[in-house]
Length: 170
Image (cartoon, rainbow, N blue to C red; front, side, top):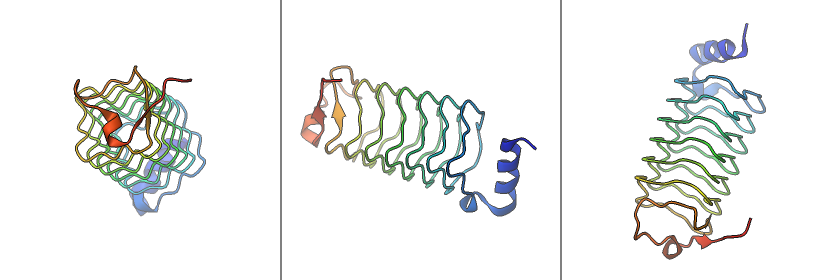
């Protein structure tokens, strides 16, 4: 039985909150519309995966590799994403409200119209991230890095006033 069918069957049997996919390699896989609410996906490789409309609400996603993944319309609200790699990921219309994104790599990520309200991005790397139309109400950007290529939701928004650090070096 293919691995995605096994995951779906296990979720249907025991519930997504009991699923532990730690260390799985799901690179380039299609997990669109999967329900993995409260699941443990620590150190899972989801590079270039299709995760459109996936439910990862309250999931543990620490050290998870989402680089190049499609997370359009995904629910990552209240997710724990310490050190996750979201470089060049598509997070358009993604719900990241109240998520913990400490030390997350968002370099070159597309966050257009995403919801980052009340999210914590301590030490996150936002260099080159595209945040047009993003809801950043109550966001915590302390010690996060950005550069001149970072596009903020509002032209007059000054990230340095929130504790973010302008960092132009590679």
